[in-house]
Image (cartoon, rainbow, N blue to C red; front, side, top):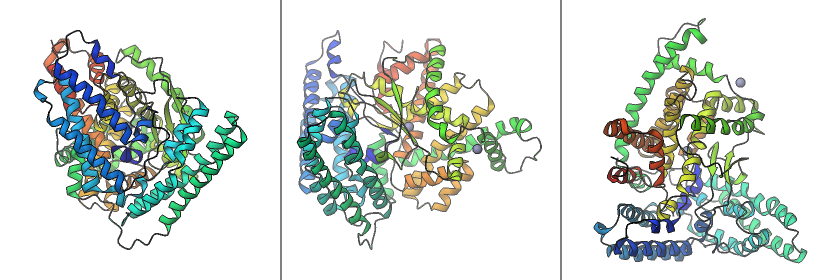
Length: 589
Ligand code: ZN
Ligand code: ZN
């Protein structure tokens, strides 16, 4: 179930990795319990892939590439039965005898089972969220990624297409009183993905020089697929939906979803309160910097009495420095080597030069949620490309493009690259690909992943990136305010009936966002839940942990060592990484 949500929510595509064989390298003999548990984990993962072939493919496990599960009553019953059987297995494990590493794997498996059961029995997004039904992305991956020969990938593509009509028929049966917002998203994303079965497929057939009779067979099935996808979109457009569900999740479901998805040491309520306090603190810092910069940029203007207005004027002024619409992608490409160079020079973390990052235009099937994202190869896809997907501004009207470019101005664009690429998501994914735990690799914790990216922004500036210019810091605070307000917005909208008007006030007046950005965020919060809080929650936990360690270790604290050690655990919840690091006597001396 987790996979399904990731498709629509994630600012990054979760495909981290693990090499489970590494655990056998340990010099000390493994306890019998640990070696039994390792076998259990391997069995669990094998079964998981049988249960979720699409998820398996996304992780680079291609044994079941030809299968598409039809999402009906029967497949959900199978999922629940699977959860029950694994839970029985977990019950006989003596947790106290496991290594710390296996303990956290145990907790993460348990959490995954609870999440799945809750998603099927209580949350029921498969009824009210039509956008969980979309096959286009996984089919596109089969054409784009070179994990196998093209004829082999096309063959599996052909076999897998067979279930597409049944898949969408089952979707129609599942859907009950869907929200208007998810209905529209499903229509847009499915229609956006049709090109995979037309243009992309045609290109691949040409490249492969496929024999005409085989190619025609593939084409005929692709036609049926396109008809099913368009048919689903039409069905949604014409759906009589007199009592649509609200897109607001509601307090009870929200608290649970936060608990399962974030796995923080804090509750949703606590994080919300922390975010409110942090917002006030940021406003204070930003006003100090605004006063400092006033004579340099706005000497001819009187500074407004209202602090937020003064900050806004300064941000608006600084935001005018931005790239042209048609050089947006190039500017991003040119940034990457500069970031690598800075990190080397300051000795902040080791960057593996053998794993290239490819900047590309955001594929159509991803469009509509975030401006930039990372797609990385999974645990079994060692040779797959890591892509930096950049949303294109072509076709945007002039005002909309200008608004977007001011949002991603000279300063913010650099911070965005830190966050998405280096040393943010991309670097974290490279490390997680070497993680010794397959469980942490595939059940990656979103709050740790987003928290790391947000943490690196501040870490880079603290290390002198941007020469400590007040302009850079002011813009950074604005960006951090965004993560902070993501939490306030998400919690407010889903549990406190926050209106669109209040949301716009928060984002535009208090978080200083351009209108286009704020509108985009509103669209996102109306089709996702909880994910927007992962940034602030993870960031807060990581930053506080680092400060705690600094105090504890004194002179022995080394930033590079901290980063590499922290990432070496893979994408586990921060609370568990913290536990493991504090217990490691080779690290804490
Ligand atoms: Zn401009
Ligand atoms: Zn991110």
